[in-house]
Amino acid sequence: MRMDVGLIRARAAEGGDSKETADLESAIKRQGHHATDIHIDTVGVSMTENGVQLFQLPGARRIDIDCAILRTLGIIKDYEQFSHRIWAVRAIEMNGITVVNSLMQWLAASDKLAALAFLSSNGLPVPDTVSSENFMISYNAAKEFGSVVVKPLRSSMGLGVFKLDDPDVAMHTFSYLVNLNKPIYVQRYLEKIGGGDYRVIVVGNAAIGAEYRRGKTWKSNVAQGAVARAARLNAELQELSVKAAEVLGLDYVGVDIAETKDGYVILETNPSIKWQAFREATGINPAEHIVRHLISKARR
Figure 1 (cartoon, rainbow, N blue to C red):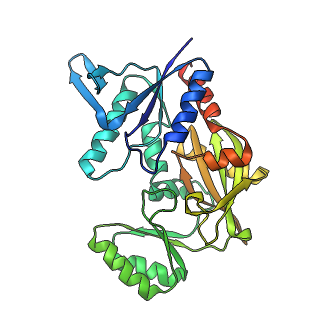
Figure 2 (figure 1 turned 135 degrees about the vertical axis):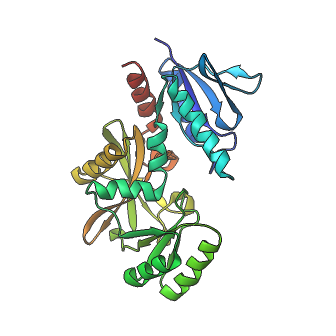
């Protein structure tokens, strides 16, 4: 049965999502289905005694899809804007439409504090991390950890991520962040064996492949100049990445894992993963797996 698959994203997707969207559109077509763009920043939500319906520009056309892939909510400038986009996606789910990744799981996995809290509470190895809105709590963590990595709670491609080696410099930085009403997410800096880390992509309950990324600096993001190559997906990498996806309830995800002297550590999870470097390195197109998984799930 032919299905209409919605691709949920913003018109100007954060960090650019055009190549991944093109891959998904092609995979949807190859598998005999139809793709519909759903630009979440042009969606209207209608609520009457007959229920919740969605429409979007141009023409205020009704959104009529069978299932959907959530890619991004775009660049957020205001909490109410964020809230509107969240509940617009949730309204799609309220109509019984299968969405991968489902909204609440996507929200948790794309928030560094939430994701690490879920992973840690389920016994998975993560870096020592402290998150707070109090600069003294963060300062004390920096003194304890020594070198630290500071990250925004919601970011990708290594943007806004920086390393501090002096707790007193860290204190001034944390004070500045507090004055901007920003939470402070502080992680113990880990020396990575080989100087890089792994990204494992999981779709459904299976790890479909892995890449090893190594940069010219301590950052391993391809967007920051790191080079990716295909990596052997050993049993431990498979187990950790699949377990991380299960804990977070994700249909597809990129799991970033570093090897340290104490073993493997999960650094982050990426529920809106960009996969062009992975595809080039491994020859694997995640879009084919994601669409196949979505159609199978929607038909159950």
